[in-house]
Length: 598
Image 1 (spheres, rainbow, N blue to C red):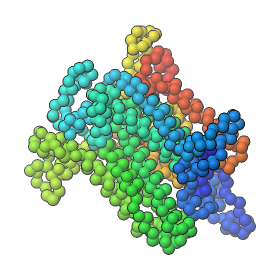
Image 2 (cartoon, rainbow, N blue to C red):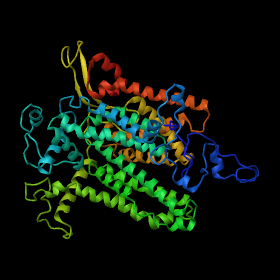
Image 3 (cartoon, one colour):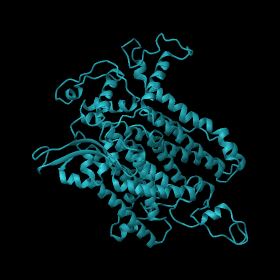
Image 4 (cartoon, helix red, strand yellow):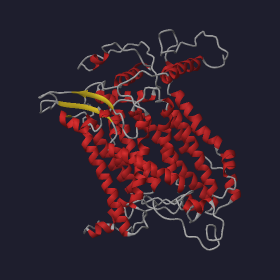
């Protein structure tokens, strides 16, 4: 509040100004780029929008100020001019409270809205839909025996029969995904029973919390509570995120831990830079910046834990570990360079790379191994424990110093790798990653054709579908936003654009290595938050920097507001397909904008 209503322009960063508009500073005679002087690469790029590093104190550039919040908002904070023009004047104490806690109140309000969308009628469709047939049952088995099992062929029918006992039998099954996501799904089953609401509950909770996380992450990245709330709102109304939040699959769990890791790295970035600024006393010191130890970094260790949980849900988390490891090291390079270090890469190589490797890689490996505790704890007697648990018993090896449990797990993983890299069986709803951003081929998770009088059908023919597809207008806007972010990263050296592009690349680009594999659009949910961050950054640019003219801000705000409203309308239009509501068949056909969506 109190002017925190747009992409506020912090006083500086390590690479570029934060505002969405502006031209390079004018050159003075005799300076580089002026007539008669050599033209450098920065001056040549200036004609294409490149902007040099901002001025300001070192502390301001290392740690741009946050918007209103604890320790920032003054008790005499002026009231909103907009509210005053509308004749609304709040007691100063209440206004101070709202401003001081707006950074939490706004994101929490958006998360509550997202939770209502995700938990309302969560048990519908009252059926085992799509790959819930695997994960709901695997989750139950983990909580009751520590490892996945083979189920009877009629297990789904028995599970969905009211009052029938769950047909559990301790016969190990070969599965190809690590256990963390299934442990999480099983927690809901433990609380609410082996039913659709039970196995969807925990995933819906993570989907709701991810909206809160993204709102806080965007607020920190863009230094704007408004843009943070916009990001949370856009994520809450994305169709693919909503569908995966209401389905017991693993991909939203992967997204949650990946986003949490990104958030912790962002916290580590601000915390480390604040410590660096304090140690330097706000003045660049080449010698100290080159040799300074950045100290204990608990947020980066927490990020490593989250990366480990990402990998322990699906192996695609391995690319997240690599990308985020590089990202945090490059952030350290930028901090040391800004602090005056003459050889920042050498300084980071000597002092930061090893701690970063331990925090991200070593910690994540430890977490991953710990996630298999149920399998390790099962019996290694033939036919009595988890699949492959007895593989190394009595088997000769050139590495007898490696515990037999780890050797058995390594063998298990080698077979899983073969499965994943050779999965080429055709599927009706498979798609190539080239088509994902434009929503070329969505996935039908559930479909029925009720007739008059069935499931609320009031016409001759109806349709009832859960379609795994993003909100089209949001995704198509994101394509344009990504082009803008590439420009911001390349020509404005904007670290925020680089960070969100890194997250997108970690979740998206690896799938291009496996284009022959059977893959689906819903895998893209892991990078949806980064698409939303790109759209949010574009919206901030539309609104304009805090110092822009009044007319510029009005026009920009109106344009940005119209875009958000159109995205929300588009979400509401497709909402029946996201939640499996019964609608007339003609209404269903009107929403099938392309033949590839059927």
